Length: 282
Image (cartoon, rainbow, N blue to C red; front, side, top):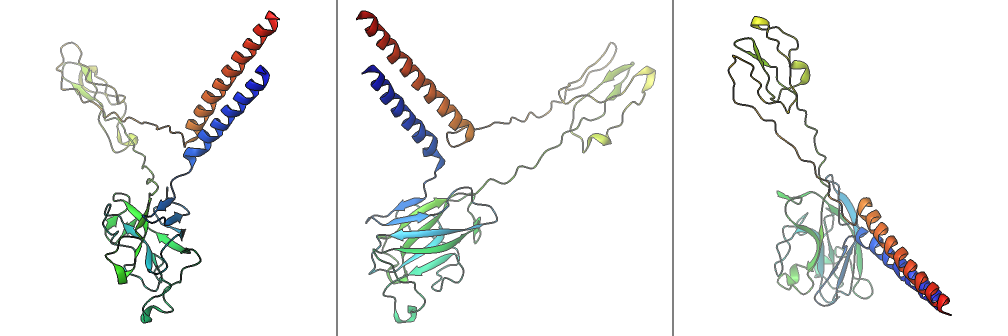
């Protein structure tokens, strides 16, 4: 019985490990509407700043009401998402919005795409880092569905799925030290200050009374010898580099797997020890 219990506990722990490792790796790509509508986007995170085309699918929509499926700026709960990429694009020519309707007005016949079974549809949308003059890396932008212009005030089919963009590549910064200056009285004073480039700093020049000029590392302050005059130290900027580790990154996953594996091993050792005690009592 203890051996079976140990095997069962280990199986449970392994299932938990799998859930912990796989769960955070998937972003939320599905939005739900007030009447059970489902809006799914094939990709929602780390969109390239140059833009990307995604597949948008929906189901459960009211086929009696036409909708727009578009990429828009989110204005919060209860407010229609606007502006949208391409504006009100009844033809879908811009790739930033599509008109879905099974009973459009006469002028919309041949332009609107009819619903599939169960109020479903599937279209392709172009996502960009800006919508007009709105920066979607700063403002929240969404893939959204909303009732079309024939029912523009009806919010019953508003469904939104937020998207985020990849961070721009950080530009490297170069710091160099400024040349040291010679203080009166045969002393040498060095200070750290930014320079355009390390090659611009002169090296090995001789000052009065045998003073030697040189360059100092960025951490150096002001050094004054006997008979010299001191100046205000110049401190260098300190840049702090931080690394965020989350469950969705490789480091976070290995940490989760390690902790869960140790927990499984501990459970197994305890069960085996109990089993040995029972066998010794017989």
